Length: 251
Image 1 (cartoon, rainbow, N blue to C red):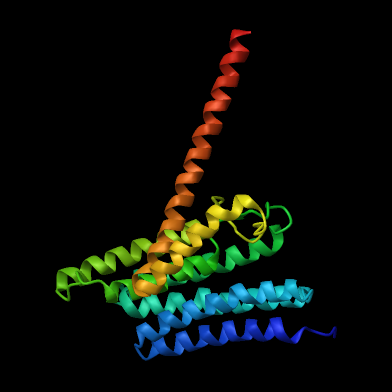
Image 2: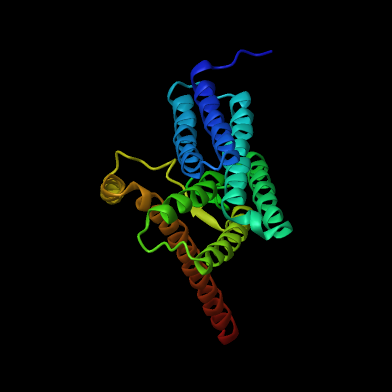
């Protein structure tokens, strides 16, 4: 067996540990702890790849191990969390929705490993599974924090309906071909990145003021703006094609 790199794989293990802790917390109805564990797992997930690249310790083993850890932390853990939190009363529909999230997450990870060399480095094909899991986990944190939450039966029904819809939408986005911006290849030394610095500072301020609301708001804004960007790009491409066809017919 080839030698493996200790530090990046240890960070990946910490990611998986957070996912397992989230699963155990969900089983004991500790939904806040389970949600925050997924958020911490996402932090470790961001660190392991960067540590490996900085230390020049990337390996095929690390890539496969990272995918398996991600399936635990961002597939099984959020699916079980959402199922126990709001989907369980829906019976078969509830567990089917939770399983759909796990299956779409696994497909997303497998496609990423196969097509990583074919997709531009500045974007993702489909919603990344850590962001999909983050949306579910931070929504629970957001829901428990906002002042307008009502404990009335009607509010519980509305929460359940929204939860089912959210799981289906996020699952579909993960296996879609919609492109989402990636900041992995961002040149932090270029002047063009100054705008990103301002956005990062603003996000940091929002997180410091109210992290319970800020995390979900930032992730939701990322998804909505990415979809709007894709829609704009599609319309611009379609207009260019129509203009080219009109020019060809006129010639």
